[in-house]
Image (cartoon, rainbow, N blue to C red; front, top):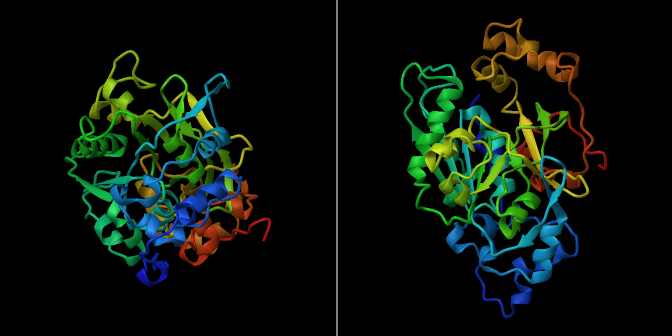
Length: 389
């Protein structure tokens, strides 16, 4: 089913141009003050002036945080090493955040919209790579540009760079994914386009990094000088209604300096530098450190197999590099599986996939766009209810 542009349309109020008489009346300052007081972020998603600008003109990025607010940001989350010992975080000047991931096909439209909605207020650049073959090695048309042409993505377009990868015949699965990443990294010119202290995120499209985590990555520096961390996430299956707990191979984050120097967590025996280092990051998701909230609130969401519903689930099942899901193994074509998912499976997925259970989430535990605009995310919110609604 093609994404319906009318259902994905965002009606964002325009943040009018005006001269502010005092910096203390600036909306960015007001938002930051609420943060320092321990309140939630004002709903930046509804302010197109925040998310439609490129990094060079982002109003909030140009403001310097007061010291008390920097300290608050760096204390609200904690970085733990593999032994569970805390690594100190100290304030720094704002880093550029570079988000990189791969796009597969049109069935990921809803997940992509959620990712950009949550992350765009703090991410400076999104780099999205798409190959001309599916995970089974079959030729396919590029589809990202068509998806991004929807008005729903207008607020984010200035920050997005798409990369097309030509995949040779005979390559598939994880080998294909690694090649896509290498091609993207070369086009990004990672060796000379970024400051060594900028931060790169290297996750999957369905791994949504929350604004609390992004704010810490932007404004804080770990003792010892290296993040070598993954962002704490829970895996939500077929939408937010079901989960199976902690997502271990979650989004890795590193400084560009670590890439340029080959100073990464997985290559001590055979140092890799530049694009070659980023190549390995696609297959090795075992950084030793973990970034999490002190109070255990969610700071990331792995919304796996949500897609656009039953058609997307059926399509992914036969294309996934990880193979067919065991609970769908009796089906041999997309149509029959789609019908089963629609008519039986969605009623109680835990009847077939025994490791998942009902989620218990409050409104403040999810990306706020899901609370503000639930109509845009019918599949991610399928059969889901907040415990405080």
